[in-house]
Length: 372
Image 1 (cartoon, rainbow, N blue to C red):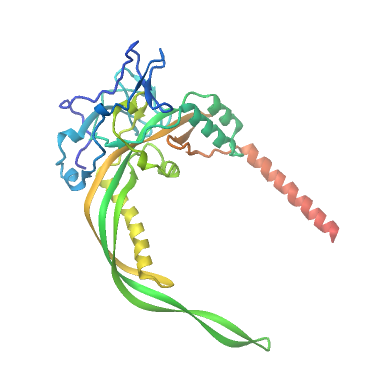
Image 2: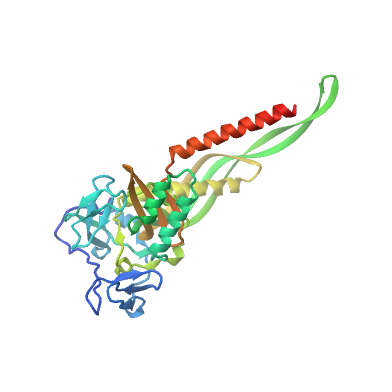
């Protein structure tokens, strides 16, 4: 990777504090009104001052990044804490010295670790409040009949959810693919056979294969790859789709009152995953180009040019609860309220359902025997 995480004293740490103009308390970003708000005195301040707005979101050159040729202005250092249990890297301000890991609820003591990373170019601001995210989570748990009642009640009455900006990579690429394969055309044939002394007609399918070759081209825009290992990928994949058209140029004001996770999937590994995603789409394009009733693809040679990328942050409400010695994690899409998480099971509910099933089967069997 071009920019490893390292401890260094050469670059000032990024500070993201916004004191209230009236009382000095920390302002937080208010998703409902898209402004900075002081919970202490009620002061609020808009953040859409276009005269102070950052430049538009710009892609970065992938090869230059791999060769460590990005300018220093594209690199930042943040103060992070690495969880000893799940290895998530979360940003904390200088005033925080002890906390719980938002990803697994493990108690952690902050240190002076530095995270040197490529700066985020854009982010999707939170659009739903914590109260709405909590309601979405408890409603989701309520639809899981086999979930323990105690966990639902504990989650409903538990501490507030944590707003986390989760890191992602996006990749753009122009691709051209030469392919070779076979096009299959299905033909039906009829033949007469004798079955039990009677003549009947049967149809059989035969495929006629023809060798083909050609080229397909596609431009990929914003192929999205999770850059975090703090949460199971199955959780974050289930939060999709994200509306990337709502990305804003990165401004630290949007992080006020929230936390941000440092990326733990480096740029090169991220592109490897993005290429796998692109190859699946290219394979679909090739099969469509081959045509016919069936397709066989024997070779694909893809050339990628003009590969660019950006580091972005997407909003997730996160809850990690320890219930009867086990940690349960729930995530809520901060844009649309989609929920994903652990699916705990209540042993007594399952046993009760099995007993009901056996009783129902016995009743049905008895009524069937009586009717006969």
